[in-house]
Image (cartoon, rainbow, N blue to C red; front, side):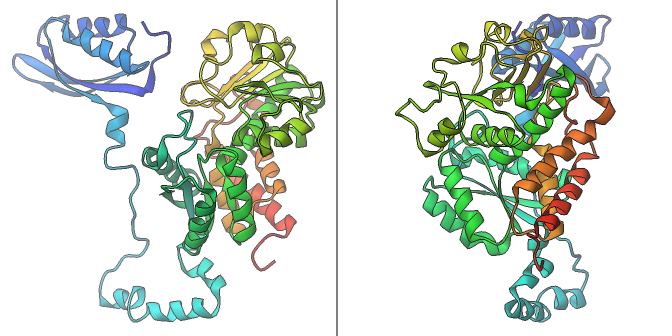
Length: 468
């Protein structure tokens, strides 16, 4: 049996033909269970004279586990495997989003208004006043999801073609949770100058820019230059979305263990775009002792291999100038924040932390340490996965942030707007706070409206709204 837990991410749909005799379905269920599979549903029941056909949904742990489940099913007497489908790949078949019209063209009158000749009147009005494009075009409610594919999930630099499924998914989430229309833009270049140039050229089409999965340090430069160049909100979700939800989760986790921001020792694994952004926001929340760790070990001012962003990080963190591996620096830490890769942290590392440690192992798709290994050690565990409690999921932030920013007519996303979003997310939990519930679930309908209202109010208070 796989040491990993079965997950819908590796689920199979097995179309099987069963001999119509007692015990066949039971034998199939036993075989799947003994192979470590989790039967989630039985679908498509069809009875014939001598056999019946059934669709069985089975959760597996990984690709190798899928193969074992399939082999186990094929060995069951009286069972014929007709078809085996990987449900995740089937869901992505032909992509996950489409473009639809918001106006129904029912006849020539509608055509005359939506297109020629009526559309010319709207074009002329916008030519005279460009701000009208935010009212009379899709800019009013449309965001570009832009990536170069250099830092996708925990997969790294897989390129723009392979990044597309993630960007499509992001567009789905914008629509589902914030009512925001979003479109994926995957660029076949890693050159920050070209990315800035292309996004600036695309800006007249969109009301906001969501940068996604762009590796540091280029991500910092690209975002800063676009914020300066454009009069629409620019938001690098891997940095700020992750930071907002992490800060919200930590705020609630600290209530559970009775600790304060100013007394914490936090170890951050991964000093890329997300790691730096999370650390900056934690510092703004009052944390004084943060130690970042990258592939070469702890980040400190004595190292000579640091790029500009890591040099800034070194100068503003690790006050004791600790050096060494993550095992060396995590002793006595209150919080671990993982934004790196799988299996980086050991059980012994967590045991060396203080009493009631807080472990945010957020690498995707596989966390820095499996939650089940430390469930009796850590006071609170959070991950980036949807199949574990306390998912630090950016979907809690970005739909509401852009919903609020678009509704306010904001020209930028300010630090005050980000902090307002974090507080709104934390407050949704309220009296339901529990070690397995420090942030709302992704499908909590209260989150996006709460975040949007808080962000819109903060934008107006900051005076960054169009026409303010």
